[in-house]
Length: 326
Image (cartoon, rainbow, N blue to C red; front, side, top):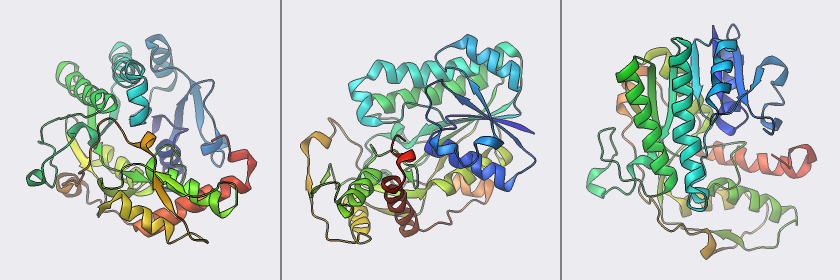
């Protein structure tokens, strides 16, 4: 069996590659990279995966990639995934996420291949929900509150359309907040952990800077997420969409206090207005019963371990210069 992971050098893609190599050693793992992709996240498995240069925004390169790899499964994880950056560069976000996904699916159609394809949408498509709508189900209305969220609505619907129009075997997930080692430090919990590590090391002068701490999030570990993604393609029928998420729901401020409690020194924090988004999604509590019933998946890693591992990841980055560019 042969799989292709777009975004293999990112947090989720690298953990997925490691999971497959460990749990399914008979599977051949291929990854899409760009010439400038940092490889530090896959340095532990680099010699066991096959990397191919291609660009989601270039259809020809994707056709050539698929003709070379001919995957049985595709995990489409590559995206412009930073919400705040989508306000700065909305058109680029749309191009990468919507046109990039369209190109990938069109390359499958053009090459007349029949892989099963995981399309990674986002819980952000639901936008701001009312308390009476909780927990959020797959049937909830879309109310995207950022250009990133709009792009994920587009990606989600393009995947559905290619299934309906061409029979391309897409299965969609709307993943709620997931984090852990290798999480980009532009995301709240990773930004907090990085600052704590820097304050501990004397690299940064406190206070720790934060944005909106009142948003409610349901957290999952990235290592549980990639296990879910494997089960998705193993057990779920094409054309379906599933919420995937953890069990621990709390405010961002409560999550921050957990992290601060793991620090080796007292940590003060203050709100930085520059970190507050023009519009935000403040209530994310998923109903994941459809996915859990279909696959038997349950999260296994407690949030405290996830945050401890994330904090240790940032401590290790300060100790190891090779990871500082990650």
